[in-house]
Structure formats: C-alpha cells, structure tokens
Length: 93
Image (cartoon, rainbow, N blue to C red; front, side, top):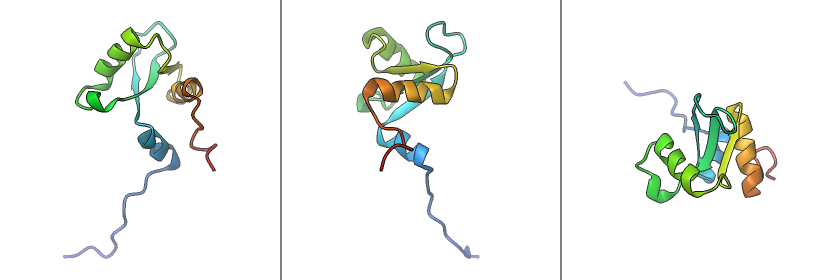
C-alpha cells in the first residue's frame, strides 16, 4: 500500500536556528554555576562526543565565553546568543 500524502519534514524556526549554528543543549541538574541548563556550539571535531563530554571540554577551555547557561533551556540559548552576538530565530529577517 502506498501512502496517500508524503509530507517533507519541516523544522520549526527555533530548531532551524539551532541546526544552523550547531547549538547543542544539555541539562546538568547538579551544576552550581549558572543553572542547570547549558547551550554551546558543537565543533565538527566533537560530532562523535556526547553533549556532556563536549560541555566538560568547553567548560575547561573556554572560560565560559562560548557557553550559555540558565535556569531554563530557553535562558541558556538566549545567554549563548548574547555572548556570541547572534540574532535569535525570532529576530532574523
């Protein structure tokens, strides 16, 4: 049986923005600095690492400059965008 309607996958503007800038997020409830949520740009060389492994590397070497943090997922993404001077998905033309 064939499908009647084939619909291509469509990402929301927010998910397209995350993919465009290779932003990865993770939750670390035990974290003391900045909150339980973190956002950062995953480098191509780290594609095979888990977000937690990448976070440890970024934490050790970036001095927090390329790391967004916040009490919520959205707060962490906004913090990262501000640090990297990126327009958010709802700010782009």
